[in-house]
Length: 173
Image 1 (tube, helix red, strand yellow):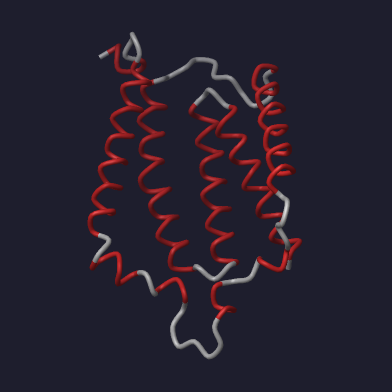
Image 2 (image 1 turned 90 degrees about the vertical axis):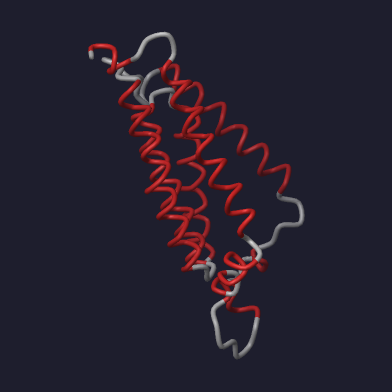
């Protein structure tokens, strides 16, 4: 059980390094898909199937649209691939930072704390991840509005950053 958990977390960290180290939006989008799918698999493994489904729909439905727009505006004839020397240097630096940070923060972390939310209560009638659904609609509306505003701001910022001095693929129009 813990081997699968380690495997999912290692894949998650590898995807994060892929997103952070690639300057081209084409390969970073592939890393984002792997990070979102492995992150949702980790949530399912710990008993959060409803939350995992919602996050997976948000990531692939919302953030991939931002990457599609940025990839269309930054039409590079020769994008940098993960095998280029400059990208490999970033990968090594980020992996070393993850290893050093993990070794520094691993004091007091034990495998016994990796239990699912459903294992914490005996004879539970409902699943642990659905308890918060009612709170989202009753008292979580303000946080939901702030989240929508942050995603809209992210879309606008990404489109302006990618636009740069030229219009990318739109300049021929």
